Length: 243
Ligand code: GEK
Image (tube, rainbow, N blue to C red; front, side, top):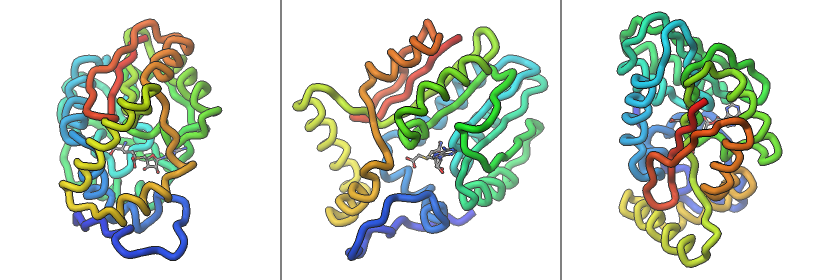
């Protein structure tokens, strides 16, 4: 697989269209996500570790909004439990096509079923691990509770949901500081002010973030009695919830 550099917003655009996970984005996604999310690689590696610790035999593992399948590949590499199947879902055809090439580049006994579908419309059944790695933030806020409830109902007892999100903070000073630290991270990775501001406009109304407290309350309301942040760097966090 080739890893092209993300230059999507490097030149001035006369109008900024809403951000879409189309073929242009899928082609540079690996570079884009690593240069945009602090500690992305570490989160991916730890998702593999959490899955290896918590997966149960004869169950399914779901990777929802799988993009190029990086979390799927990490889990597949680390899981050694019997009779586990990974179901990786994304509604972008371009992502699923590239994901399929990416996954077939690695050998493993764990089968992966790739599904091109809206995660709001799929069934989740007999799951022991479900991953939403930076995907929930792209769903309509009104649809989020229904998805988390569906995941809770589709998990077996002791099953886990791993939920990673960009966070918002209710305190404006904290929000400003963590936002600036994130922008510095992007600048240090070679993104220009133009690229940063054009991408920000494209993501407006497409990616809607919430506070950690809102996420944890929703998880609790949907039935998860145990839910906690296991990772945070600046305004990016990952949570784990146990049924
Ligand atoms: C990773 N998890 O590398 N149904 C299915 N897929 C969706 C939906 C939906 N309703 N909405 C968005 N997506 C990955 C990274 S990226 C995060 C996830 C980011 C998909 C969308 O097509 C994209 O591939 C993914 O969710 C979000 O571990 O770009 O910041």
